[in-house]
Image 1 (cartoon, rainbow, N blue to C red):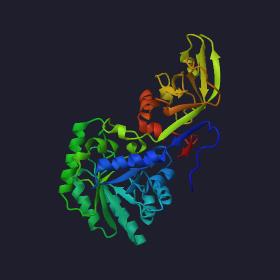
Image 2: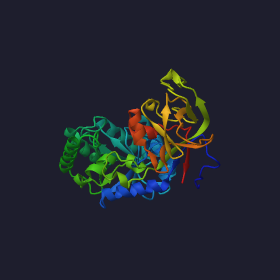
Image 3: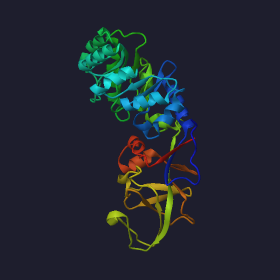
Image 4: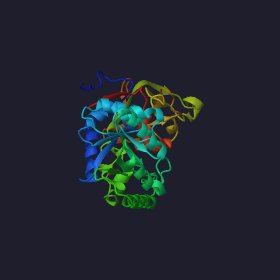
Length: 376
């Protein structure tokens, strides 16, 4: 089914996703990974707010795997991927989901003996095979077997009748912040791999976006990378950032243009009061669309007429007020850019995240269903 662009002058609040940028970013990740490593596109959380089904359809010919957070996402990917690319559920599954995971031929991460035994029992009842990836906790602390029990669980999976050790992986908690700790993680993981004899076709994965961009040369033993943020055009590290292309442009429209006198409060709490007469524009977006309320009063801008316009007062659920006193002509219905470029000016997801005291991941995944997506 072909994807249609937005019609007419555009909706109140929308996100335009450039599918060619996504494909470009995957190819960049593949180049960094090297010819001996595949790429798993991490498309959890509605493909980081970019739209799960369209992103999977655009990338399935470019990647080797898809990574998701849960069974529901895995089933959606399967429907959206006619080529049937492998899908790995990266988070622990609930016991009552095991049957659908095995019957759906999805791959699952495990950390404990109990999980392995449960998958073995379910797969046996279904007369199938449970495809398991053993997660190793090398410092993330969220899931994974401890290094001291790694060999034991490898042997447990290999000895089970109905489970297949398809992969082994771990995760970086601070590859974008702590170089020394990340290097120690890589070395620890490499030692663990040397302590066991894995089947030749076992995939080994460790690198998220920051790990891939910052440490790929230190991980020649891995056979799969798991970029997420980088696929959507944002680098968590400065290295090679210019090679990525942001895929999402977030737009709202001007609903009102008004003159305010000096001494006039703007928005809830009157946290901003005009010091002189001002021309202001009201935009058709707010935190109900995903724009972070915590950006209020922290110097966040939008783009109108290729010019930065400061946000005034608090971001509300459905509306944002901005200063347009420095613009000559602003009309109702005009386009305002919340994230993206207009002329030579750019507002990045990282900039908005910094103003809101958060991270680009949260900005992207915070876009709500009220933001209409369009694809080109």
